[in-house]
Image 1: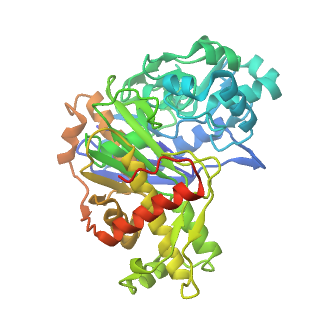
Image 2: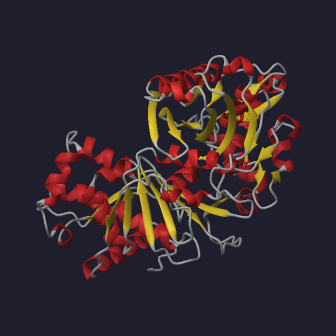
Image 3: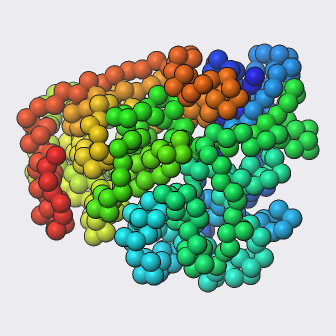
Length: 495
């Protein structure tokens, strides 16, 4: 059995080829292409599909066992982003370019949705703390006001993976773990939210039926199979959201383990078996891999983006390696460095302070750019600790971290020390694709459960053991105090 795991990422498209022992046989990647102008960010759905087919073919060319592959069954399994979507006409052709989640033209409509439905009431339904221009509901409202002809012509509204399922199999199918990122899905009832659909001007008939994560969606269409590498047969698996697949791929889809994606945006995912809805706990919640699973999700915009900003603007473009070396040479830097509040985008969990701003505090003439860079890294670690304190109901015993930020051993150790929780970094740069491949193996009956994959060619892991201390706690209390003083009123309880 051959598994082509397709990761429809925001920045890059990637395909990794695995065998049924989860051995990585080949990989191929290409940049995601967008048409951008101002707030507009759109993509070509036809071009996207062709690029994925090309990557699958490139993987097959890199497979040293290609002759054997031609005699085996093959599965294509999808993972990646959620919110981007396309409008199709009755023939299945796009009526306009696809709208990326990055498109930010619908901020006015998001505010109108908040006024119409109320964030608290919508949170109880959608699992999202606040409306945003990111969500398809906001963009559909924008289309109804600015492109009514496009919306009127559309027979279907398909999220990016839904449309790929349709192109591969001939039938549009939704997938459960991506529905909570629409703002028109009732997460707890597992149905489309009719009042929001009416508001956006679309009918439920325009939306696809929804399958559980990891479901086999059927055979690939013959005309598409003809474009693919030789195999005994091809089937399509709907996979799951990229964050959840990364949890499977790193073995962190388990109670008490937080999955951290340490990239431009610092994203946190946590399976919480004890979760019950609490309107005061403003944490995004979603249907997980099991129908009764709830996965909590938070995204901190001021993650790697904050450090990238300071390296570019404050240190003249210094690279990570040079900063790592400089920080390692200052053993007691935490005793005298300034503090930084990484609220550069204002709205971040767990508080969602719309009026918050980034700030350096306790600066003196003796400080230099390296001290300030340390403050940025520590500030993100403080925000991580604060977010973890509001995430889930069970104690957290480890953080499993992936993404570009894990290249910095200094920063990873700092986050472990500030949070007082060990951080594990798997040597698995393609953890998302690995997790998707696991779902395909379970659906094919090769594995009984996704946890069985932990023994199949598992990636090496490096553990950063937490070394908390009074200075760390003192600086965290100071961080909490500053939040309360600069952006009152806030919950500044020290946890």
